[in-house]
Length: 247
Image (cartoon, rainbow, N blue to C red; front, side):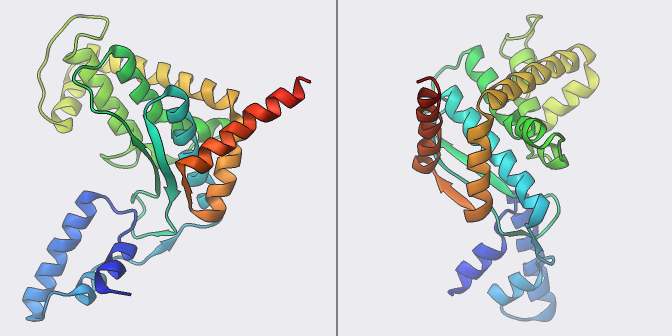
C-alpha cells in the first residue's frame, strides 16, 4: 500500500482540526529528530486505534441511517453514500457520515434552513427511536451535529430575520454565534426552541419509517458503506411491502 494510502486509512474519521494538529506534531518530531518527514513519522504521531465494534458500531450505524433516511425524505439533496469507519484514533473523531449532493442556492427559505437543522439532528433522533437512548456522538465537539444545528438556528433567528423577533446581529464565525447565545438569553431560547422542534420532527419521520432505518443500519453495520442506490432500493422495498400488506 502506498504511503499516502496508509496515512489516509489511519486518519479515517479524523476532523480537519485533528489532521492539522497531526501535521504540526509530525513536523515537530521530524525537526527535533533531524529526520525526513515521511509517512512513518506521521503514523508514529497518531494515537492508538480504537476499533468500532459491538454496541458502539450498532449505535453509529443507527445514527447514520437516521441521517440518510431523513435527508432523503426531506429532499435535502441526492444521497451519494452513507458510511461508518472501521476504527477511530480518538474518542471524539467522526465515526461515520451521510453524504448528500445538492444544488447551490442563491437564496434559501426558512423551510430550507429548518430542513437542515432537522437533518443535523436526525442521527440523535434515530438513536432515541430505534435504540431507546442517545449517545454523546451528536454533541461531541465543535463539528458535531448539535453544534452545527445550533449554528444554523442562530443564523436564522439572529441574522436572517427568521425568528420570533426581527433582529439583525451580524456574525462571522461559529465561535461568534456561540458567544451570542451565551450572552443573549432571548436568542439562546429561540435557538433552543428551533432545535427541540426539529428534533421532534426528525423523531416523527424516523418513527414512521423505522423499519427501513433498521434495515439501513443493519446493512451498514455489516458492510461499512452503502451507496445512494442501495439506500433507495431499501426505501423502495418499504413501499412495496406496504402495498402488499394492504392487498
